[in-house]
Each structure stands twice: as structure tokens, then as C-alpha cells.
Length: 103
Image (cartoon, rainbow, N blue to C red; front, side):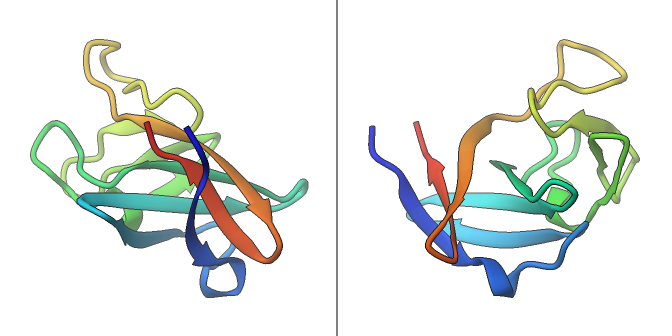
């Protein structure tokens, strides 16, 4: 599957989540630095549909702002239970944009 252009990198804040809609998907995009990299996952927490793009990032995880479930940015697996997870997508920064392989 090809990559989908999601958002200009300069519209994302380093260390914060950005809410993006692509087709029928609501996504959370996380831009980190040192080194610069991007993570893309579904925006909805599986526990109670909290907005993950509004969560805090720490130690490679995002913390759902509603009930503080934490999800690994790389795998989408919840740190509280590996039975809870969020779908993650391959992301990359290219030509000043965030791109993702939405499968």
C-alpha cells in the first residue's frame, strides 16, 4: 500500500500530539526530536474513546488524558495490559510532510 500525506511537519508541535483526519480515520500524530521521528496511531483510546492526540508523551508512551492508560508509541500496546492496544501505522517525514502507510 502506498503512503498517504497527512499534515505539514510545521503544523505539528515537537513532543505533542496532533489530531488529523484522513479519509474515515481519526489519527494522532506525534513528532519527536533528537532524532526527529514521527509516530502515527488511531486517535481513540480503546478503554473509553479518549483523544490520544491530547495526551502527554513520556518515555516512549502516550498517556490517555481521560483515564491515564498508557500506550507504546511504536507498538500501540497498553502498558497496563497487553490485551488493550491501539493500531499504529508506519510513519515518515518526507518533503516537509508527515506521511503514513494506512493499512
